[in-house]
Image 1 (cartoon, rainbow, N blue to C red):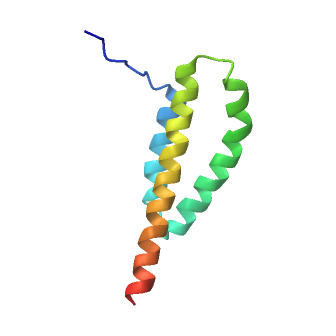
Image 2 (image 1 turned 180 degrees about the vertical axis):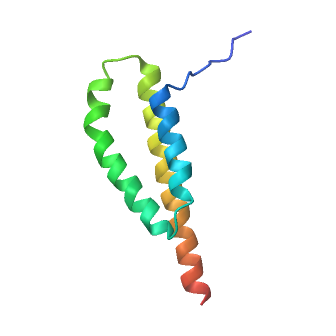
Length: 86
């Protein structure tokens, strides 16, 4: 029987997740998504050298990036629904 893979979340990733939750509470949400885009642009140059580190760190960053993308897609979908329902 295979053991479950435990991915440890680094403090940097944890603080980014906390920041993301905090930023989601800011109104209007557009501000949050602009900040997300800025954060992702800042992270891009950092991600490349991290490929030399453990694969778990890279995996965490990829997961975080996809979480941001998903939240943006969800927001745009909500916005589209609001606009079409008016």
